Image (cartoon, rainbow, N blue to C red; front, top):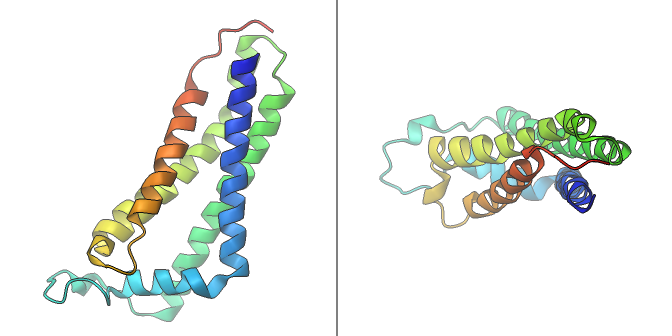
Length: 164
């Protein structure tokens, strides 16, 4: 039962983290909007970069991208919290029922992993060359999020063999 409780707790913590990040981005919109704006504009990459043709300088597209990021953060949080609640409800049932109840939590964890891996490492880091910026480089933080979420996803995905 301890392993099941640990799985529930870790999924819940990822959910609360994601909700906090999304909520902070709404409450303090301008701070991280500036991050999105600079990354997409590629205005702090190496001056001799030949990849700046990828830059997007439209404020409307900056706002749309930031809204998509916030929506993904909040949806990750909601799915993980709901997934943790669902797992908590079946924690005392036999292993097949517990394993079958993981789908919402897995969806939330995969969405969070995809957001920070694809959104920040692939799109931000490589497409917009965020790694070249001394000021607007979020790859280190994104990697921490990817690592934590990935470990929770792997732990949760392990089949539960316990009997209730």
